[in-house]
Image 1 (cartoon, rainbow, N blue to C red):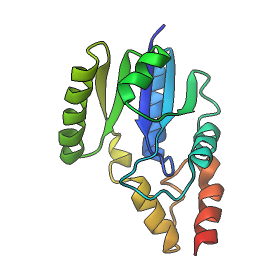
Image 2: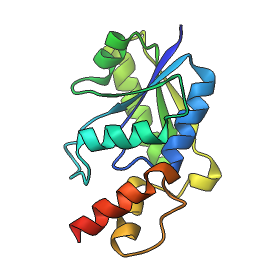
Image 3: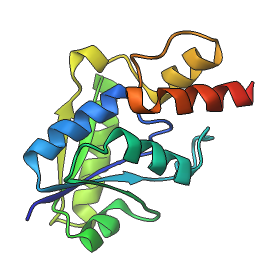
Length: 161
């Protein structure tokens, strides 16, 4: 059985993230969307809220699981029985950073492969930060997040205003 980890902060999950999840689910028996706290960012949603949003957005994907993790990604992947880590790439700068991380992870655990997926061109400009910015300014972000979570994101932003 092939298991892949798709890690990220997902604050919130975007249409681009969901595209990567769906495409990964076609390649692996199980895809674990792994939510982490990024200490370099101040999240809008708690880890529990992010997990709930991702579960809503992926409810139709029977081979997708959603979990939280702390610590080293390769340790989490090994514990879950995963052999691959999925990374979505939007830009060249994404590649440079993710390439370094892939090399580091390979050094830490040679049994875990990192696979890069190029983001669908329709989503290449979307990030969670862009979603939050547009939403906080009252703009239409309905095509930037999965429809299943649009209202949750809108309400959270409105509450924070």
